Length: 62
Image (cartoon, rainbow, N blue to C red; front, side):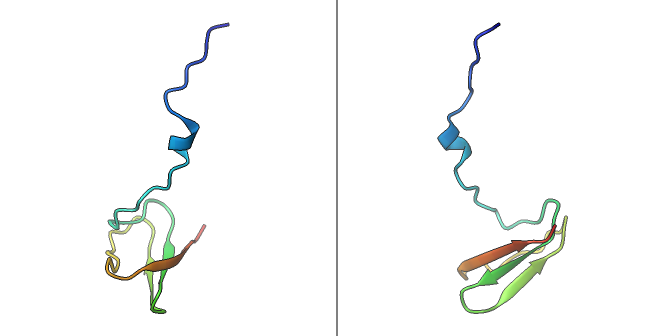
């Protein structure tokens, strides 16, 4: 049996990922903003979002 080597720490893997706002990878989702508005992003689309409005919730449609 060989020795096991981990390439990264578990903490690094749990860090939240910051979405670049450039599109949906595989599932559509809805972004809800603090001011009550929302944006729907279709799967595999490149729809831009409001980058000046705070997001309070995201629903990913599976």
